[in-house]
Length: 301
Image 1: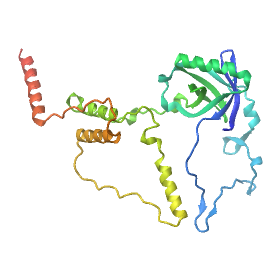
Image 2: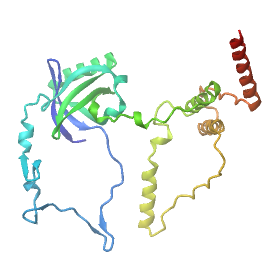
Image 3: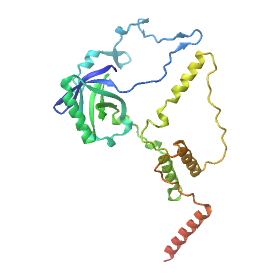
Image 4: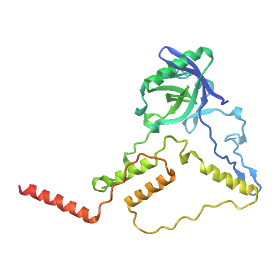
């Protein structure tokens, strides 16, 4: 059973829903310690007081705000808990919006909200059903870990999920990263080819797709197992030498579609767009001449 990381209430107009907050995700990454390679001993970070030049205990450590180089103000956890914030004890819903209006860049870690006792069950189910039938998500504010945050509430199966959200001004403007305009093939054949590749790689969900497997962790476990058995760890195969030929985008798309279809297995039907036939150089020249001739006729008219 996951531990409760916060307790409070969802504030929904005049309705209050007491909840426990539990993490909705697990981290299965392989963990490492820092070690001294000469004797394999653990290397630890110790906390020292700069003035007394000694290691301090955890109960001697608190939070401090630096006003200037020679002045620091201590702020206690109790003072943070008692701040006059309506969101300090509640997840306060401010609006309901279409899910598609939320930029995924704003969405961070997720938590399950558990109804706190039988009294909370009815308003919890009420809010869950209202969210389901409205096809909307709720945007809320809450205060944890020394800061107020935005939150998004949505429904997953029979539970209400809270996602931490970044504030709009925390999202960087990507305009300066956009590449310069480029020209694509006539009639956008390359775009149609890319769509065909998307269709051939489309799945009903992520459960049956290749990325559902953490191949990095599997490979790392093989390295650790080999070292435990005093064997040489497996190594990556040598990278293929570059051919030096210029990439033909349409040919690459065609080959990619063929590989994607083969990986899905025989007999599996897929609704895909057929790749457009690549125009020959002669055909492109003929089309260009026709367009030029029509333009000249219009100018002479």
